[in-house]
Image (tube, rainbow over all chains, first blue to last red; front, side):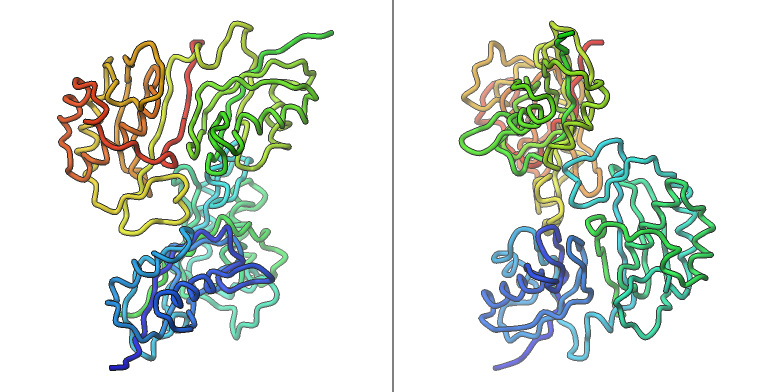
Length: 249
Length: 249
């Protein structure tokens, strides 16, 4: 009997060798590689609808992708089937059936990102693709204090790169902190949604706090200003990982 | 005035793209890349004498290499000079002058290695080149208990791959333990020297203890047997990092 299943995949990837989730410029997107794997396993041309369009070089542990497929493969075996044909820098970590009206982006209620900074005198080559290297000493306590100003519902226009067309730049941040997690200093942030480059601009601004170029309380002023030029630089993509996405039960 | 300096470099590398410290088979060795960098900076053909011949895929944070060079570059600037021409998977972390009779291998009194295991249901692609993936649940406490049997002066013939020609297979292990260090389970071992593949065979044997195939006390029997066939498999190279080498002051 023909019956379409709606299956939500949890996806991890090392974004180093891809031009983003959805192909940017030339090059290969992660979405495309998963669609190719789906074709090999299911023999159907299908679209993977992603929850988040991560940029070139950005990583994921908990990206989500929705596929609609006619298959007799048990849902809990789908990760193993797809992983058997995916390159080793993309891994399906989970698959579960969801209702027809589920949308990986619009049904999301929370997203969590981590931003890794390697703060040493010299880079550690093993970690060059999953962190940003900063040789100036960083004040973690000041960075963590600064991060607290992100928490709450604010207009984050100052933390949004040009070129995005969103209805509102108001977002709610539930949790934001900076901690030592050897070998990294990690900025962890959870919110109901993020603007274009928002986490990387937050990270770039926190780095400026860490080296003493900005005070923690400056964050409050920057948010109120709604002026992108007052925030810090957009930190490089390779430090960023989309860690998890929450949905209503 | 012409004066040769003997300079000890501390070297970190991601071994993924190299055929070992000293070129193995075809492909490029890390030593070779550093010699090329030295030529670019010093305009002299020189040899880098390594402390340890790490295998293909093995990493380092604290490898050492000795160069003898006529240069007016201040010793503390040499890492920056060499890093400016090295690929980004090799980093010189330190340079210091040593006496003429210093030898990076024979003067070493202690070496420390870490072996990273990723023990999850599915691999994390970001860490695929710097850890070994094991999906079966590992008993860290049993592994750590087992590691204690390595400590002391023993004949480690059972933990040595064929093909090495050493005078004695007796080595002293000062410290050995297994601990959770998110996202990894890490085996850390310090000794006065290591036989060919010794740390990887130790790690492979500890993994067998972790999955319940061997008991911690089996380690004692395996050491006494001096029989390579009784120890576990040689664990894959990418989990291994040469962390540090100590010399007498």
